Image 1 (tube, rainbow, N blue to C red):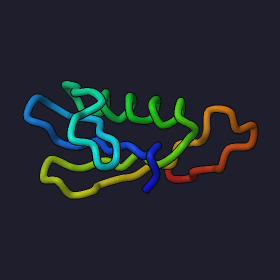
Image 2 (cartoon, rainbow, N blue to C red):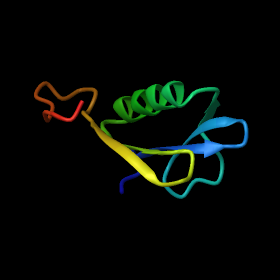
Image 3 (cartoon, rainbow, N blue to C red):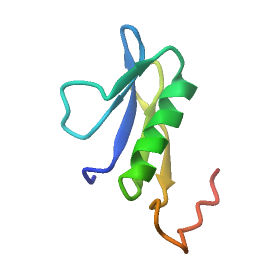
Image 4 (tube, rainbow, N blue to C red):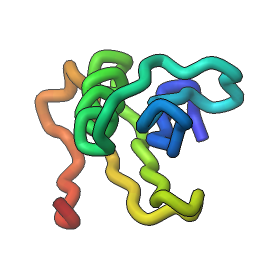
Length: 80
């Protein structure tokens, strides 16, 4: 877990994007897809990292490695 990682978690108002150890959300979105896109954008702009996504019940359902924004040879993620 690095400071660049972000989590998409269930929130009373929709779906939230949170950083590790954060009390407040970076943003709250109506759909999980919007939250996931924003989380990937934040991680990309911060130099790469991991985006982990929860399901409605709080269990981790997926994760995605986001390459650094400035890396000319990013790692290949074959999952997505």
